[in-house]
Length: 336
Image (tube, rainbow, N blue to C red; front, top):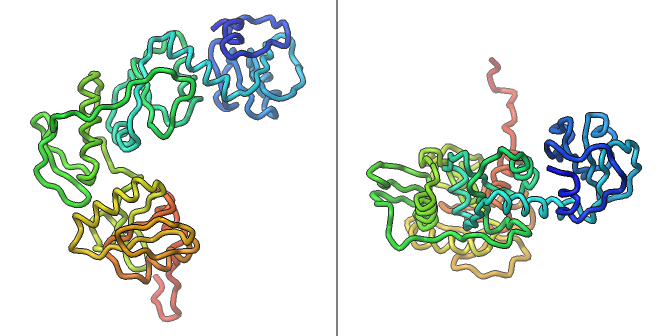
């Protein structure tokens, strides 16, 4: 891409008269920089290294010392904003259609999609720009999640939940479903609570001829059930009658609490929430002051379904993996 075009698109200022007039790519990390690239200096301490490695231009938003007048020095008000402006231009010039999915839809879609002509945006603008910058790069669509919007993107197409059922559910438990889709049988570790999102994704893929494979789906990490023992320690799926699920989004949490209350009446449900939480739930709430007290509650309280508000499911899994008490060796234990 031509130097003058990039400066204009990013609303930047060229602070010298360089010998070069174009770039063969962009780089945002020193480890990925190649000779001829335009380097976005998010860390100005890396500029000297970038110049030594053969960068043809430097984009910066702080005061720097120009130490090589042969390359382009482009000053912008804000690097992140300039990147988004460049991204918007690339999307428009390449006629790439942008789609917005609900968060759970995106979580399902990003797992099952195996279409090389499509990119999933997960807050990594660097990745998109690196992919789209080259003239021979071909992509039909970019898909992003509602909670992670693409700034400066004026037009996008939202997902649609189809009126028709699309899938034929045969068996459904609290945390997995068995169904037929296009005459093929599948079993997914997906609560029937999220079948609407699954239908929306399948309809989206079929409608826009996007290649996918349902067998690639693993689980919704944001809401997956964690089967635990009394220590507490995470066990294999289905190997315990004690399950914990965490959620930091209130709307999703309430939805899950209602789901378990309606469909898991055979077991005891317990809700855990931070001390400063003022929300009221349909189940009694145990307040925890910090993560350590939460772990103690999970160890000592009796329940079948422990629904935890205030941290994400991924954070809960890391907490349990890192904070689980270690088993101490007794003097009377045998040594191998």
